[in-house]
Length: 463
View: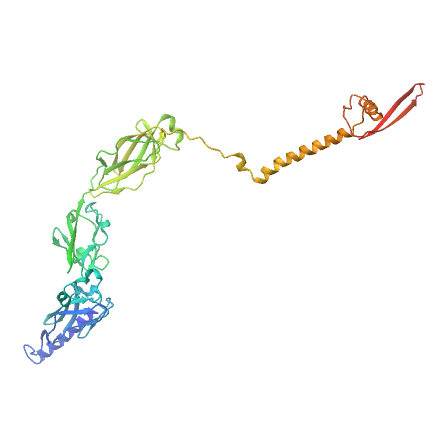
């Protein structure tokens, strides 16, 4: 609501001026710039967690418009614990970060006046490590220094790349996120000259980040973030280089990839560094020997040789503007040996360089497979049941055989003769011994018409 209040004051000023004109008075005696109506204590102290009110005793005609700032930042309704009253600023539940410089600025149509305060937050229960032995120091500054923390960068990993090369038309973000007590302020400079608010960007979100868009060669230079509070100051510098897009193909810099030797089963890697105006595509190829072409689904032809395309990882940009990629080879085998090529390409062409990998033979003796004992693979009922079954069957056969020997007829007995006759009954009956044979011999006589008479015997037996 600041613009609305300002408009109301301007309207009131205009009414006063018109009244002076109607009265035909050159200057209204009661009108003038704001002024401090009473003496103020510019140094204020408050205990941590309590509340405090900073007065702004100013008056003027027309009544001035009041605006408060802390360490150069406007205090508005978004500051939850802060409330701007008619005659001052009230802060509830004071925190350590509230330490700082407060300014009450009163403005009307004739001028403005400032009332400055330095607020110090006191904690009477500091941690043991900051106890001070001298009693007069305790009485003079009761652990005021405990609430002061020197600024520090909270995301140093995002600030490692200090030399940045970007093509024309691209963008870049420079980060300087920091913390401290009281909350530090940040100032951005280019070549040691402060940047304007429009160049830095507005909003709390961009407070710790400088974003440069649609880069031109004029953006090249040294950018410094200067972070400070009452406890100290830190800074960081980025070097930005905006390069014109050139119609040139990538160039492999350095000596990589290099010829490499690795033990059988070991791990090694090739690396490739490419310089390009735009981010290139870096690909690794392996030469396929004539007797190995059937092992791969697809190959490409480069010169007089055929190559297979290998899967590769991400392409990393380096602070010097080049790009790096690595090929990792794990558990090296004999078939991994051979020629490897690093290929860097962009829209204007490509460049490549080759290196050889040598895999040393495996010196470890082969390990014979050890099979577990067969008995371990069978359950114990089977192990016990099979021998017991064999013994049972053998005993049954032996018992049957002994019973058979006891019931066999002695030689010369009628049963023995019948057995002998049975054995002579025909070739079709095999010679067997039966425990009991019941026989019944019948003689039959047949007479035929032609006068022939036939006689034969029927022998009946049962085992």
